[in-house]
Amino acid sequence: MDYSTDYLSGFFDAKACINIYNKHDLRVYIPFSDQDVLNIFKEKFGGTVCKNGDQYLYQIVGNKAKNLIESMLPGMHSNKVQIAKAAIEYQKWRECIGTYAQNAREQALKIIRQEH
Image 1: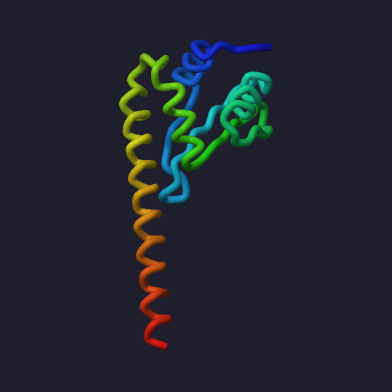
Image 2: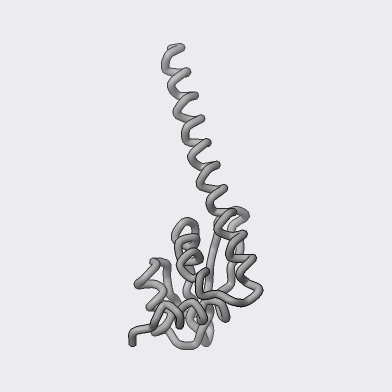
């Protein structure tokens, strides 16, 4: 079945949970009884679908979760919009910290190599 972006956005708005997982990873998960619609999210955005009790669970983390939220945001209308916007900003911040940490590490290694 082909689901429109509007349908997926509405579904996401109603069913998705957005949180911080393992103390720092952005995560989106969607529990639902029908695996087919969750597989559409998996095919379009990545992530995983697994059986979780009597339901299925779609889960995606990190930048892929940010990309999913950005794609769904224009069709969202609930109070979850503010959470979605905050999650996007959080992940952008995480990307900056990761880049900064990598650059600092490279600079430190360069200095260490020069001293030896």
